Image (cartoon, chains in turn cyan, brown, yellow):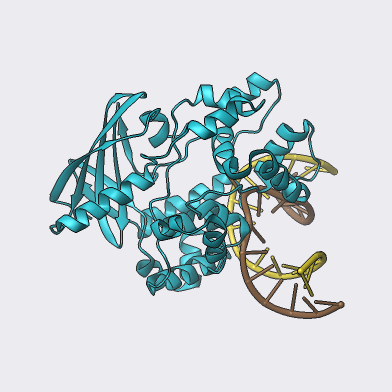
Amino acid sequence: LVKLTNSFSFTLQAKPPYNFALTVQKPAGWNLFTSSEVFEDSVVWTALHIRDLLIGLKLRFKGTTNSPKIIGTAYHKSSLGPDQKDSFKQTLTLKLGINDDLGEFYALAGKDKILRHTIIDLYGMHDTQNSGLFDAGILAICLQMAPLKRSTKMMECILEKYGEVAEFDGKEVKAWPVPKTIARLQIAKFSKACNLGFRAKYLVQLAKVLAAGNFPLLEELARLPPEDAKEKLIELPGIGDYSADIISPHGGFPIDVWSAEVFGKLFFRRDFKNAREVVEKVKEEGIRRWGKWSWMAFFYVANDLKNLSKHLGMKLRLA
DNA sequence: GCGTCCAGGTCTACC
DNA sequence: GGTAGACCTGGACGC
């Protein structure tokens, strides 16, 4: 448990439309930064590491979707210099999609038979970035070859046993472990502790590479062209095409067996007996239809499956 | 109750 | 440059 006794506050003016509730607590149940975060009305308490520094974060929403304002307070252990505070604010701006303009995507989506429903249902939902590269890697690797339920269990276990608890503003929030913590674990023991199977090896290898400290941060990958960022991510152990699409700050079109079934149905209006065999086909079709907006399309569809099933009169399997 | 199958993939070994 | 086969585990399914 780490008590975070220092703090500073700041204000973020988001690019409208910005629906805070939908953005920080996605309808499909995806977390903002960690599953341990706390929500009350228009306030969220969460925790993350920025360059191995544990930060507790309280975000309060003021205003409306069309005139959005976020008051943030960052809690930390030792005092931060003005440069560190400024850099943190910039990083958070990126992670919360504060400056992202939804206009071009909404224009495309409005003319699309599938997407036009989603942008009404989820008006103002912004894409957010993962809390960190390693955090995103844990997510991607735990999702591999496992039913979602088991993936969730593995992640909860990692967070519980190896995460760091931030205490601030009367709350306790667990942040993902830093690479250094996982890098020194024995693969067999780690695997057994959280029933990770073959994933334990990937996680420890990934942790070692990232702990070495010369791999670019998510913020740095965000400045690269999307295809370069993806190529770089695939160099990492345990990270292939699918996981790179999950991790990349540019987004991708991360088609796996589940999403192949869902998007296969949306695109071709039929069921496929073996979804694994149509992964490539579905991926191509999505990118053909939606191009550079394919991630936003994926994101909006995945968070609106329940409504979309009704709008389109077809059964779509929920996550 | 008990075997079999396979999941929100990646890597290696072999052509 | 392309593709079987192995890899952990446990819940779902068929018998």
